[in-house]
Image (cartoon, rainbow, N blue to C red):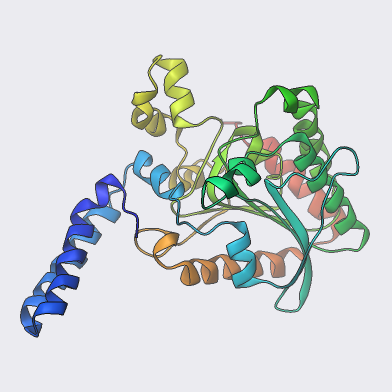
Length: 310
């Protein structure tokens, strides 16, 4: 397990316990160390800073969209292309079943190694990715299928080619059209929720964020570089941005925090997937009871209210 800097005391204790188990049968010593380990975990994970949560949300072993699809859905059939330019592999999309319920699933996909990250463009979508997503949302509407989107991106790809092909227009079009898609849309931020790249598939009736994920208008490093001309002040920027699930819920930006196993989703992917599935099913059951015209009205009002404070 790859550890983060603030997790070193935990990893050292875990190593000690494993070493002791291989050289001694003294259960009392091992029990004492295990109790100390649990205490240390509680101390660290119950007082995480915003920047530490960002690091957990970016953990390279954290489950990605395809991992969750494999764990919570069946009969997944990937669909490709925007019918205008090409297929963007930074966005995965297709038909699937959630406990027998047919759905459309759309999400950002990162890579595990250099080769896969280059293929997936580090989860940074191009305009054709957002156009593919919108095409398939409209297809879902045609066949009356709920849409589930999983957000995990540092942001939309800012390269020259993407700008030439209309990156801003593609995202803006998605924002406008997703408000009018006449089927339930459930959004979950599973890792990074960066800027317009996240929002491009983030308009929905229910928006949830996993406990250690973040959702922000800009990355902490980008914010620090603009405000202080120093990207190393990312920890200060993370606090100022109010980007954690807990802060977003208190501000009314999101509807729910999806709990994660202690230490992050990467420590127990199966349990994280179970929690995500439970949240999606709950919201789906609620939204299916709402008439379409009311659903669209509530969705519009939901986003109009954001940023309005008395």
